[in-house]
Image 1 (cartoon, protein in one colour):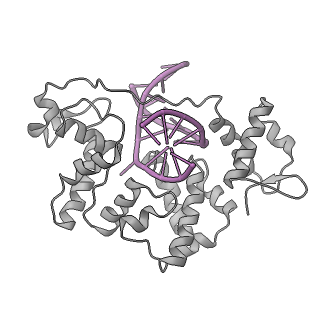
Image 2 (cartoon, rainbow, N blue to C red; image 1 turned 90 degrees about the vertical axis):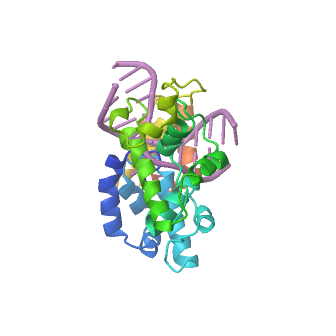
Amino acid sequence: MLQQTPVTRVEPIWTDWMARWPTPSALAAASRADILRAWGKLGYPRRALRLHEAAATIAAAHDDTVPSGTDDLEALPGIGSYTARAVVAFGYGRRAPVVDTNVRRVVARAVHGAGDAGPARTKPDLADVDALLPPDDATAAEISSGLMELGAVVCTARAPRCGICPVHAECAWQANGRPAYDGPRKPVQGFAGTDRQVRGKLLDVLRGTAHPVPRDALDAVWPDAPQRDRCLHSLLVDGLAEQHDDGRFALPA
DNA sequence: CATGCGTGGTT
DNA sequence: TAACCAAGCAT
């Protein structure tokens, strides 16, 4: 849920979700429609389906227990380098380099003396953070937590609060005179008018109805017919929507 | 490796 | 206010 999504938006949904489906097998037993409605407007609903699939795999192949190794974790749908290591470190208290956008920024500044992190490069990024972790599991996990927190609260992208930074004295960026970031900028992805927006609108209709709806109901939310059709088709392909025998559309069973 | 994938608060 | 961006992942 936290992938590319602010904590404040996730927290209430996560709380309800865990109360409703406290174990992987419980989640696996739920319908896709129920899961997508519970996910609500959290965004990137394919994550909900991947989580559902991951829960089924964990229930069937891992004795209903979330794996504790990065390889097993990364083999699950929706679990990548970051999430796998976050589970190892924060779920199991073990030593694992946890590299999210905040940690990459902290390392870019404090270690490399740059204004910000460039494009993600998984292997070198992992190596950078690995080098910062002590051998002891519990301490390493605590350091990982601290790195993320430092990036989220102090070493922020906009206006870093260097005056209260605990590593100010050792920061390479400070020593460098706080140079501005000069590398390539990740292009900002637009939203208005994109397929993402249209898919969101279509799915919002399906989430909001208890019964399957005719195509007309979907046509109403977007004027561009070719784009609308393309998006509806992609939702069907992704397993986020279903078309019944009578031609009506609904969330998948 | 670049791109597409939701959403809504902040600047 | 349009742009930015928030605990990434899959292809």
